[in-house]
Image (cartoon, rainbow, N blue to C red; front, side):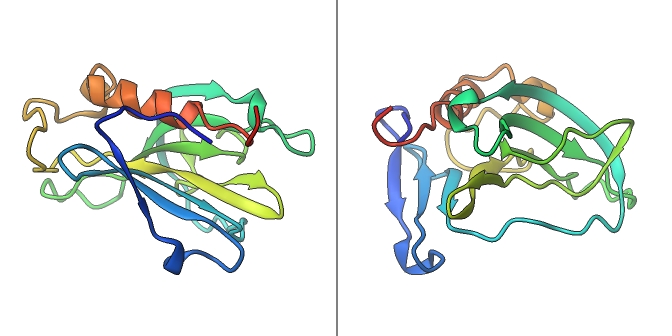
Length: 166
């Protein structure tokens, strides 16, 4: 269960879910994809290359702790090696059980967390080039985005995730 703004909607994408899992997408009133929640996914990835890392926001989520691991909400980015100004660097928000990177570099973004029977994902991507109607055009950096009402709504929604009945 999670909370979201009343003008946002949930799109059931169950036909695309992993066997025995759930897949829903959260859309803004303008139809913009804000985040997706998937369960019963396989977690684990190899880190073959690290990239310059930045963390804009983080909060532990004790209600989602499993097996002694407390996931956390993060809004983080990686810098790519190519310097193409028409492409943004990967920046995303979501819940992760992965260890927090130490030092200035990190593995690719890994927003998955431990959730029985295997894992889950709840997050989305920040895109400074998004042209969805209603977007604020001057918000073109992750730091500026954290000061928007949209980011506040996304953060509140994702951090409100909790087991059913709690």
